[in-house]
Image (tube, rainbow, N blue to C red; front, side, top):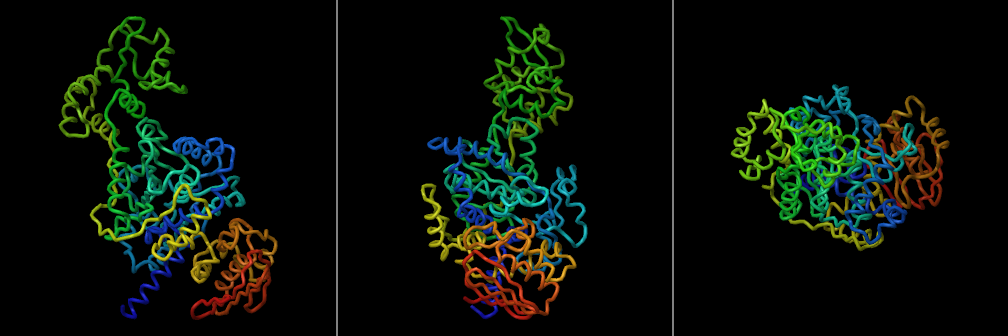
Amino acid sequence: MSENNSKDKELSMSEKYTSAITLSDMEIFVFPELMYSLVLANIMSPIIWQWRQLDCFEKLRGKSSYKKLMRLKQFIIDEYEFNLDLETWGLTSREKELKRFEKYISAEQIATSNALFGYHGDKYYFDVDIRKHFGLDKYDSDIIPYWKTETIEAMDAFRYKEGYTKRAGECVSLSALYAAAAFIVCSIPLKDIYMLLTPLHSQNFIDIQGGVLTNNRRLVTRTMWFNGTALSNKAQRALRNENVTIVAHNSGYVHYMYDDATIQKEAYRYFASRLGDYLSTNVTLLIIANFLRFNRKYQSSFQFCREHRQEKKYIKVEVLFRYEHGSSLRIADDTFGRLLAEVSHEDYLPYKLDGRICCEQLMNFIDNEKVDVRQSSGREKLIEYLKPYIPDTVEFVEKLADFVHTEAKLPSSEKNYLPSSPIEIGIEQSREEIIECLQQQRHNNGTAELAFYAFRDMANCDWRPFIKAALERNPVSIQKAGEMPAADVYKQLEKIQNTSIYDGKRLAQPDEVANYARGDGIEKAFLLANIIRQKQPEQDIKITVYDNEVVLTSTSEYRFTSTKGFEKQVFIPAKGAIRTGD
């Protein structure tokens, strides 16, 4: 390998390591292995393991993984908020981010898949003005949010942030949380969890009981996907209208822009097949009812034809839906009989309404003629049959076909599949055994290696990526300092709690300290170093950690107290490389 190639490789690894610390939207997009590194960091964290001792999960011991998953959903809904404050982690600039990643991906490629760099989505997103919906429309200059993904510790620490009463996280953080919790709390093997990232969303497909899709704090089963409710329709938005940019799995990843993939070829094909099954169903009476529930404009073309007290009776679809509203009973499912029993005698008609087709009659036609609306021949046959009843028949049939089948826009399977080692940890292992197992996999698995940086394990990681990230990608602490000189910032740091949001020998970044108003002495020292570097870039900085004392030396000396138990020296020269020593 030439000297230049060696330097390029070293630079690339340096970017990956620092990206594993900060985990921005752009960093995960460019280095897709980081997505699973965050999941592993959450699995190594003690927080989710403590959930297993809670009464709500303890009493499910021995129950199925599916039941545990449903309880996990309610726990996350109760305990976590969905955070879409785009400026939680401060602002950066398009120019800065594009410059940083130009050797990996072009600005034009980024603009086709990243909402902060010009992505608007397909026609659906234009129609709903998705940039305005997410608050992105105000970022029409070079300045953009530094959109960052949180570890479980940073999510839990939102309780300490002004304006929050709960733990919180954005969609990527929540998907990483769900993946880790599904493994730890629900005993679902990693091989059954697939992460899907689109330009505006992140979710997981869990291969259990026909498939379960995570959607922010909620879960969507296959039955729910087709139930025609507004909530389910909202959950479908990403897979219906966006390209999937990344699929991440314990065996690796596939990225729609990269020719190389590290995911196992068989695993990816299996996933695509299982997701396809989840997103497709046959037309049944239940599906027709679900379709009409969401597409109300067609209800006036339908009626239900039932036996009532041994007589033929008819009821308008929209009337029956009024009975369903606010009730736990549903049309055409197992509770249908009980719902019909609640219908007032006055709402049943003794004659068939002209201009309306019976739902049962439509089902008989579909069954007898073996109509498959996913096929053009089936749609044509159904259009001809429904013309006497539905004015805009073509639109109706096209919408019905779209309702029963979604074609996910996955990355191509025609990739160069690189030999890779899957992450090998089991649901039967303890947290300590998993950490030890991942330590052993670090030498031959880049995702496992990067996981320890996302975990912030400073006892077992090079400090330089952490320091580089602290000095280059923490705009919130700089903004909060404003015009204050370093001495005044130091006084403010002395006032906040001397407690880290990370346990053991793990460290928070400066903006985590700034946002949550707490930090160990080492973390406070790095926050102050970030301020000094910004205000006085010509100054050298030295940080010495010994036992419980931290001393930052620049033009002045600042002292902090630490409980982390490190012995370390950090040299941050005005020019030249960062150096560390024990």
